Length: 248
Image (cartoon, rainbow, N blue to C red):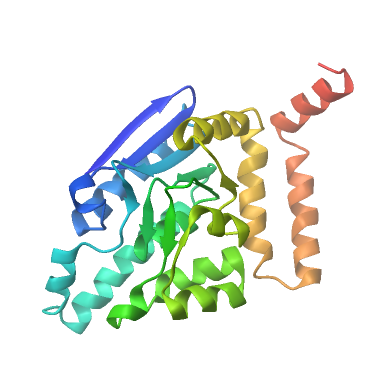
């Protein structure tokens, strides 16, 4: 259900259930967790691209799986929710830059999957939306990451209406970082550009952004002072400073 490959420092994870629009199934989620762990611990991989096989990125929950939910006990539903939350957090906290190359529909949990990536790339075929309210679901886990991405006002609009928006609109409201003509080649070029940066700096930058959003201003400044001090002792900083000063 998951294809994994790597090329020139870029890891590619592809959701591979095109006949089911790459919908989220417990087995797919389990395989995705395993491939994320593999990419995280692969020193050759500097940036990760997540995309979908076929015409959809991820259409949310699998229909057969949704039918099974009717039979779940409270405990089983809680464990299932925890498993879904784990995959979102695993991507959100991934130590290397992540790019969602959204090919087609990213709906409900699929939209949540895109939202936890660092950068979202959309094209004219991309579609985004949170349709949970239309079938009596609560977009609970995904709402946290959506609000971090676009703010409370836009999050309310998307979550309460359940409307599906195209890639251009997603770019205009700040959900997508890039709106491109050629999705995979341009996402790959973005990854190659990121690889030119210091891996150590990008790692610390991601941690900094995640940490300071939960602190007040004074606490955030103190945290950044400590982080700045640590960064100046790294080999990447010493090498980069030397190259800059000597115009290499």
